[in-house]
Image (tube, rainbow, N blue to C red):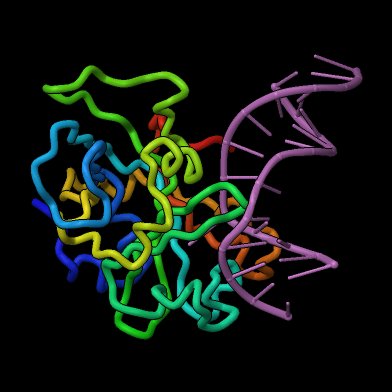
Length: 204
DNA sequence: CAAGAGATCATCT
DNA sequence: GATGATCTCTTGA
C-alpha cells in the first residue's frame, strides 16, 4: 500500500524512523514529470529504505530552513509529502520528503537504499546500482530537480513509497548526521537513522 | 588503510 | 565572491 500524505504529517524524527523498511518504488524508462501511461521501456524498480536523516524545523542549524525561507527551500515550508530535491557540491542531488504541518519547515533525507530482487528483473549490482549514499542513489536512479515540489504520495510521477515491515526500535541505529560540522549544538543530535547491520547503509 | 584534494555550480551574501 | 545534508581518486605509510 502506498503511504498516504498523513503519514508525513508527523514529527520528523518519527517519520524518519518509520520510513526505514519501507519501499521506494521508481518507474524508470518511463516519464518522470508527466501523467502516468503505458510505455515500452518502463521498468518498475523497488528498493528498501535503509538509512535516513531528519532535518527538524527552523532552529535546526543543519537545515536549510534555519536561514529562512528562500526560493530554493520554500517547499520545506509547505505541505507534508512533497518531494524536496536540491543540488549540493555542484553535482549531487539530495532527495528529501517534507514532513510536519504546513508552514513548519522540516524534511527527511533519504540516504541509502537496498536493491531488491524483482520477478521481472535480475538483481542489479555493481557500481551502476550502488545506492548506498544520498548522492549515489539520486545519480543512479536519475532523480534530479525535476522531481522537486512533486507529491510522493501519488503514483503519477513515477516515484512513490510503499508501506514496509515495521522496524523495531531496537533494530534502529541512531547516530549524528553526516557533513554538518558547522551546525553548532545541532551537529551532535542523533538524527541519522539506519537499520542495524544492514550492508547497504552508507559509509562512516 | 587513512587522509586530503578536487570536481563543479545553484544559491546565497 | 563563498560555500555546501557528497563522492571519487590520489598519495603515502
